[in-house]
Length: 323
Length: 307
Image (tube, rainbow over all chains, first blue to last red; front, side):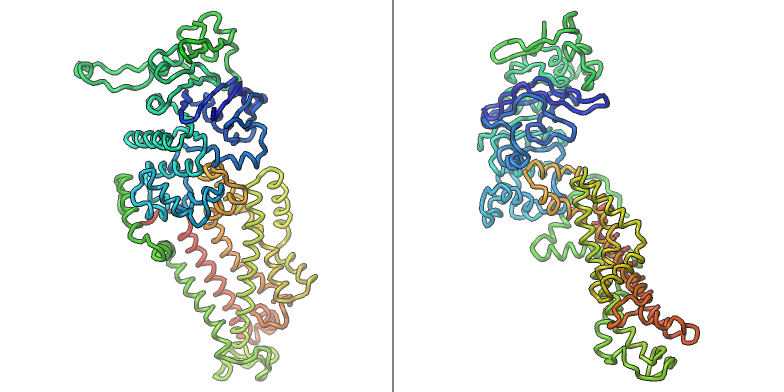
């Protein structure tokens, strides 16, 4: 198991003291597999990622639970030890490739910085290694790209550079936080393809954080649906998407825009999107029972006061729902 | 003014222009050219640069050609400008031209080095304060505020009086009395940049605090700080003039402020004794100020991107 998160609680600041942002989160991610963490904005996806990296913003704390990377407990590590792990055994790809690169430093220098920080190779070979990596992620003329500045790159090219910076120290775990959200549709597919290719070469585990179920379905082996800080459903991607067991997962799938071709399009039937009414309850005002109670179309009486525990719905497929 | 229709237009224009100036040293000159294009947009700053160059050439080469000791008594006191003494003589009969030429060396060198000290202290305090925040920030900003409420000239005078008037003490005193603005500016830039995505991604890649400050943030914070430091040169020249005027400059070195200070009582009788060194101070301060404006235009990252 590369990443094992168990019963993780994260508390964040609010006007009335600390409130739980992530509750009882459990994730397991073996090598060379991809787990997608999906859910709406404000569900705690990014906070979870940051907590694994040890980069929680001020005021946020891991209050209980364990995060193990390659068997090593990360929550016990000192700041310096965590810093040495970052970039070396776990790396992160950010959402906004346009702003995630240093504008006054050449792309090559930024990559060699990472190589030298983690002593991946001797300084004399750093340049060649960086150029090789730039070629590996599909950039043309890597020697020339090495001495270019980020503003000379398009969004997709920058995200490729971010991928180089993430993989260059051969991390066990790559956390990709909305890696394709800011990109054109055509480039999105290329970046997802690139991530899969890099994974098959290096055997790294990928934690994909996204609200885009399509991206998740392309890349992920397993899906974990997060809502208001709690896991609603988890299972193999195909099982979760084809037979969603939780009303929230069904809602997410129903609100996914789809292309209609053929007869429906000709008949002029307008596409219908089933929006989930209401909003994600903010931390501190979450229902006592099921987190999804206030928006659930199939809520039972029980759901208001009792929190459902994950129940098996199939092989390795669990959902936290009474129905 | 061209209207950019599409972002792709913008990028391709950008790429094609850059790629022509990519290789090696050509790249450095390309950047220099870009800097110059920004700089020359402001005609006043070009005038300032020419003026400053003229002043610097004059005070470097001038004393080599016009080899007259500015402390030598060469004529009767208050000789008006004539063909022997182009700018006249002062109250003891020393040549004003020799004084103005060699006095510039003291004034400008103090100005330059005091500004360097200012920048060094200001950058250190401001970057630590802005990067770490918390109690470090509170402590350093209290110290900065303490220095800021002291009257600058008075503080410099006290320091010079305590440590004696030499070139080094004058320079250090001026530096110590005027680093606060650079510190506050640096702090603000670091606080702003610390929240940027590229800093976060450097943190996620395992960069240490020192590396983040020096390699990631500082180069991005420099442009406004360079402009402020350039302004500080003119401020330091004025402060050196004031100190010398009050008799607190290095008495063994001629300086513009010293000439004015010693002749101030006779200014109405012999105008040339104060007008020429005064004009020298005025011109050098003006040229540095004008040039700083141009630096602002050329370096300001928030300016419109030029193609």
